Length: 312
Ligand code: SF4
Image 1 (cartoon, rainbow, N blue to C red):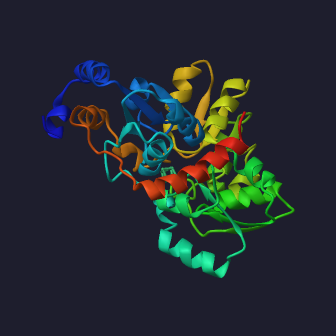
Image 2 (cartoon, rainbow, N blue to C red):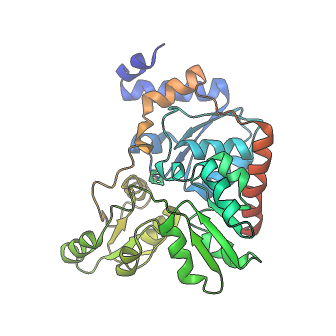
């Protein structure tokens, strides 16, 4: 059946078909917190990059369908290569990851050879293979603090690098000049408006937001950190990140009051994954993530170092 046929199916039928296919094909759905509400509802595991990476390690199902962007599906394949990993849309890339092409990184390393290279998980598999260690927004500070090196190059997110610098004062950290188009568009005007509109509410943001926004907020957290903050808050919370997270919070903590800081903070790349595409992907087993073994092994070491260093 063509993808266009799946687009015509009613929601109930799509969900039933997905359940049947999952059983028949021994598949599991991993989804990021920024996915559409209907994808979040059918996911077997929902999380941020770190949670998804940890989950990917332990999956025993034959197929992982990854509802997220390409680097996330690659990470699942790097960590669990004997599973078949599917990404429902090959064009669902991450523009932040694209800010660090592998050729540019190799040139940079020639200029700064004696630095430790730390790549945010939002990076390509080739970049992960080339750096010393990988981090996520949830563990970047702890991880860089624990590294023996005093000279760090952090890529590709400049705002996250600057966020880390607030806590790590004894190291030189060179920030790569990259950014996420969803978070860099959050500005002080949004904070001012939210303070007026929701007096008494806490405002929290993702560390990919600009430094002045982080300063003006009540705290910066990874997506999983944001969810935990809202769950534990007695006050209403305004969240400055991709708005898909609000669907998860409303489902898991229905009593909590949560507002978006920027109502149109949408990642078009994440939203490329639709429910019909997800079901189609599993049915036809496309698009399979394939990584040359030599690159995968090196990328694995960079991710594994992170998982070891930040073991709970
Ligand atoms: S929200 Fe930003 S960092 Fe996340 S996938 Fe979209 S572009 Fe990439």
